[in-house]
Length: 457
Ligand code: NGQ
Ligand code: ZN
Image 1 (cartoon, rainbow, N blue to C red):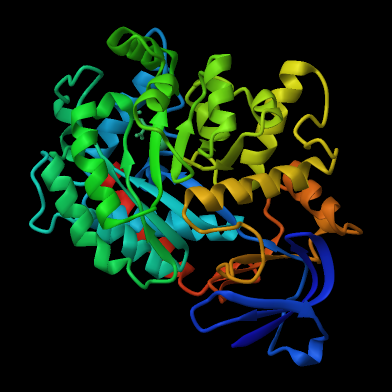
Image 2 (cartoon, helix red, strand yellow; image 1 turned 90 degrees about the vertical axis):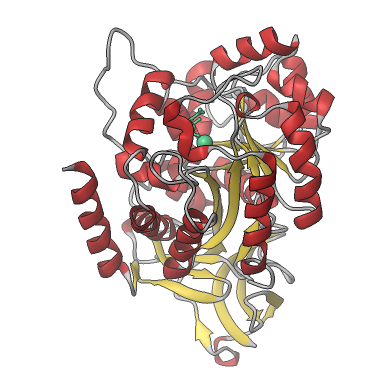
């Protein structure tokens, strides 16, 4: 057991001073109590807050961030971006994916994310041919999480069709495709590397309603429940109006409506984006145990639309944040944009702060911790006994935080901190970032540069 002294810390019931955090050999917090510096083996050098879960990532897309910012054709859209993205992924080898994911996860840690939900659909070789090891690509993601130390919730993606009504996939989607039995074999192959690993969980993700069919889901979901009972289930939904319209054409129902009528999603489910909801869908979702996975910087970048955040929160909805295509790796930017979208729409300020009118930064941070942790299967999202010891030590020397304490630390970080004022980062009680640096960062970055040189030249 290791004891850490914290001068100031955000606990489940608010800010506290002079606390001792006790962490066991598996990286879980076993107790928190008042105490003094000389009772601890380690002294944390600034205010301590829980680390943020990043609930939605397509790691390989980091390599093309910023490379689709010129208009293609008459009108650029999500769908033309998707073509460019498909073009980019055609050449990626398993080594390339590992190199990109390692650099990405390193940057996430430095920005204050301590765990990531990897929504992983790049399964097969370049022409759709399966690798000899069906878990080849998943193992590259596991390796990247191991090299960097970030907590991983791996979400292998079930992808079979090219559109609603079981349309066959395009040749560019060949690297994503599984039949039901192949996918179940992948889960079975992966499961042992997750069992008993304190910093990893295994879930799954039907890519979207347009990429699966009811029949396929009825074959795979019971098998998934058998292999990974109670594990996270993620799904892209209602991100673009075109897919809402196609869903209505196919089934007579809007996507979220279809999901609730057919699959009874519970607290293990996380719906990614859910941008376009009618008021009935919004209420159903808010009143359910389902988490919504919001990725505001990617949603803005792709021109998706604005999630009805204020109503959803007033109705009791739960959300977490993700960096999705990784045009930004910054929890503060994701959170800030949730609030700014509403300020711009309503021409008011401090809209997402709960009934109590607590600090907007603190409210957003705590809500995203709770939703992100639930979506990644991590439990509470608060620093308390029984949860994994994932925390950030903010940098008390950073000018941004001068003369701030308590909630003002979070408000200043979230609304004015483009350079994260994060000094040290711990995952499972193990220190990974030391004064802004990771012990492997030089090698990881050199490998990333070489990889991009090969792919992009
Ligand atoms: C993805 N990304 O799976 O990477 C998707 C694009 C699709 C976002 N939706 C592909 N942001 O939805 O078909
Ligand atoms: Zn996505």
